[in-house]
Image (cartoon, rainbow, N blue to C red; front, top):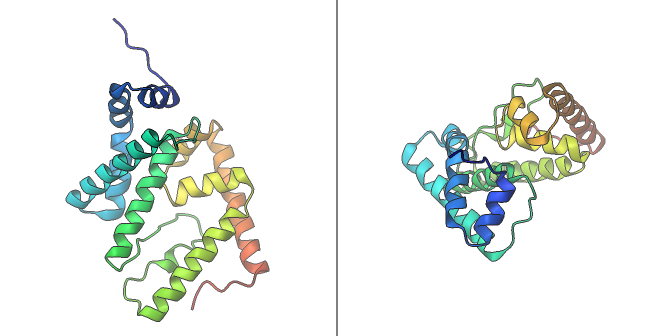
Amino acid sequence: MCKKMYDDSVLVSDYINGKEVALELLVKRHQQRIYSFIYSKIQDRDVTEDIFQDTFIKVIKTLKKGNYNEEGKFLPWVMRISHNLVIDYFRKNNRMPMFNNSDDFDIFSILSDDSLNAEKRIIKDQILSDVKSLIEELPEEQKEVLKMRIYMDMSFNEISENTGVSINTALGRMRYALINLRKVIEKNKIILIN
């Protein structure tokens, strides 16, 4: 008997309605992608396992409370949760993760110095906060691609699959997002290097 592949949204709905096996299918479907993402940032298998488990504990709690509303975007939502837990891990250990971006405009690399004193750390946190709020000013399609690429470490092929657009469209949106982000930074006279 052939098993029908269900959309993530169908499995989420099934899990919310009491079918525990639906969550197991979701975890199996996405575990490699999520685990690899966490490990790429942490580089420690034990910590990666902990963060991976914490990610799905948060997923379960959110689903059980009925607070999930990312219709059709389960993987990006889970990736965002795991990304936030990675950031929390680095904060607790007083070091921020490296954000490597292959494009020539890499504002995230300036935020990765581990040897900052308290004053510089506060300034760096403020810059990170400023950059995040600037990203929110981008058009929705550009913002979505930028977040998937930078914060979720997704390939353009994965972004294409998750957004339902061609790879060229995803690349174009990323390019325009970076151009627009640079314009907003210049307009607001934000200094990213201290």
